[in-house]
Length: 284
Ligand code: GLN
Image 1 (cartoon, helix red, strand yellow):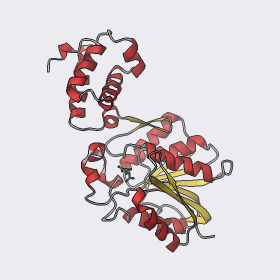
Image 2: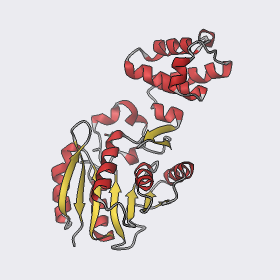
Image 3: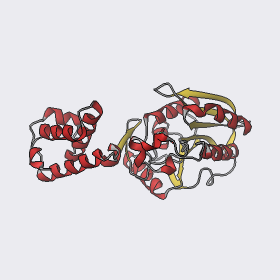
Image 4: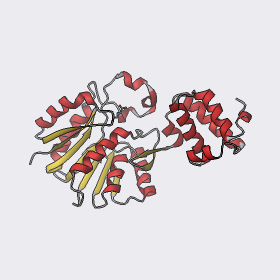
């Protein structure tokens, strides 16, 4: 492509329309990518449509358009995604934080005492989204976040540093392996919960996300089974477990939790009205 046709912001966005289409979502993607290239806000694009692009900016934008046209998630192209109003670094090693998970954070904040010095674990933290949102909201809590992937623990630590969040630590471990029995006040986690071979995995952003963060066995419950067993041991008596899951898993998760001695079980819905997270108390 002759990038000379992208001599201004307005022309670059027209070019993006040809490449990605004119649907509202595609237009937004193009603006986010161009703002990233120009290190400016989207407002800047609307305020200065005539502003010229340098050669390297044009080439950079064209490369990103190509990759976006090939399906790569915008968050991986910019290396950033906002969660709970916190700008987080993300990359192909981490899941891209979703608004659904903000429901989980909201629920955890609603049931856990705000002023007590709680020890709260985030298992499979990825970019650190849950731990950082909770640590940011509750400076008196101590967030212990683990991920099996060293690359995730590194990204999550960088996110904590750039947000100036000091009450969260990140380390490499498998679910609760790093914790002592009855040592946690709460566990808040978004484990992988998609079933092997789910057609959803063939569409959109998820094709590019790490399957270790998404897929959990033939019924999607392998991680949740492991995690609930660990949680029953490592939560203090009456501690809280807050889990994200798929809407169709609610009944099976309920049974699983009851079998492990959890009580006070309730499920909350996400913005789309799907049953997205379940909270429970460990045996007293
Ligand atoms: N909500 C994600 C999806 O459906 C799955 C996230 C997860 O498995 N934890 O793409």
